[in-house]
Image 1 (cartoon, one colour):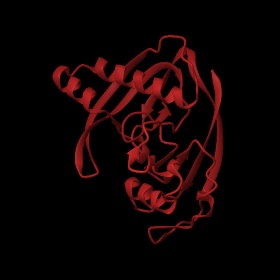
Image 2 (tube, helix red, strand yellow):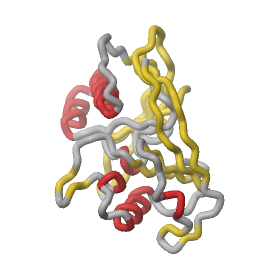
Image 3 (cartoon, helix red, strand yellow):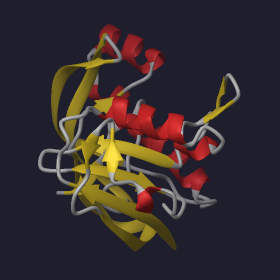
Image 4 (tube, helix red, strand yellow):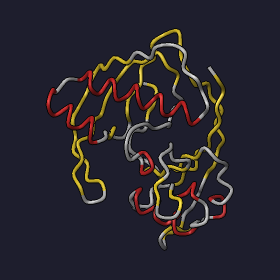
Length: 202
């Protein structure tokens, strides 16, 4: 395992959806691709360095970079932000010698290829393989080399349809076990820049 660092910026719920929060910061910091994950007109295919979430009891910004710009924000889309708190988190990340139980606290979104395969088979192993692939992608963001096999076992799965940018997307709430240490509030899967696929230890 390795030690990784990230930052959580949290504040009381604004009633603004995560996509609009992302749009606000993306426009305010146009010159910094970390906030919108674009280089000019091109999407940067990497783990978003800044991710925006609307959780049950609060709004949250997850960032792999220090949120120095965010610290000075007190208004988002004409809504005053009170009690903004920023904390740095240092956690272990990587292959574990035991299975650890996790759950998605926001829906896990899948890409088009996985969606087509799942519709054809309804096999949860399709989703397990998808989770493994996304853990591998997340590991690359922290320059972590995986030298052992990742094993994922889904314990509970619930299908939901989420309206994402005007389109209904098949997503999942999942409880699963994996031999990998994933810090709370990391996210995997599609649309993680706007709060999908957030993980907590179960």
